[in-house]
Image (cartoon, rainbow, N blue to C red; front, side, top):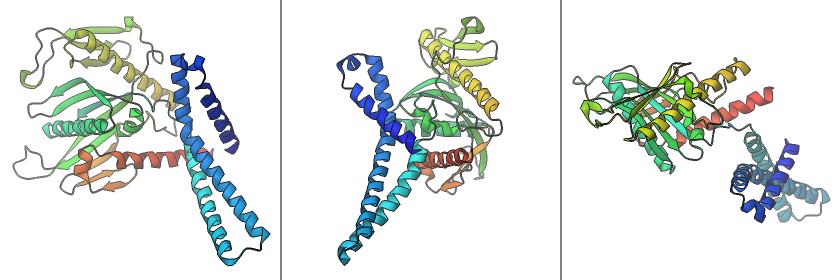
Length: 358
């Protein structure tokens, strides 16, 4: 590990020098790529230097103690510094192992989120709307941009389905853990007897795929236009600006009717289609490599219940890691960091265990 860290630090220093050269600064693409690499290496190098400082402090303290001749007060001070250095070495060493784990290449990408009401009829649709609100509030708290691609509203203000893109650095790294079945337990607004109902909503999270990553043959596409419409006949366009794209080889269908421009709807639909096909290809690739060890990215079973939102108890439980928080109102208002951070920590720890077993 430490040989790799020496190499990483050398590369970090090399990039820092290159970024000061006029010919690099004037080359926008090269400068941007180097800045990105420099940014990715910074937390590793900073932690490595923190580790190195602790090792040097430990060495100096041991040399002083071995030399002897210290008065009582100074000796106690050196012994305290030695304890602190040992603790720092242990902590920073563990953190470095996590930082050196292979990075998910999709983490920095924009993300496409698709929410669909599942079991529970109108209540499921209403909760789909609640999750949509939760995710958009979370994205806004990060300063990320949100674009709705397609939505199918119900009469009571819920969503049969809604899909949207979140644009921002690191969006996928935070949202990728949301794929799966979300269960809600609450008394619906439509319930007259005060009974608690259980409903489900399915969430799919896809990294946006670049054209260079997945090329789609135009001959494989069937593109239809139709008039946009909303719940109860609202938002009806007089022109056929809505787009339906069918990928003939796979039968994948994407609709987009959020924009009044047919061109913009087509562009959004193709971005979503590319993301779906990329996701399927990645799943198949991961299965072929290790069918007995599903990776975290893109291979989770979306039919699996991942989280329960219990409104009577104000409780949210993530079943994958056994996390329970009694702060449901806060979570539903977009305060997802504690949940997401716990998931990241858990899966990084599991990845580290797997790496050590190999």
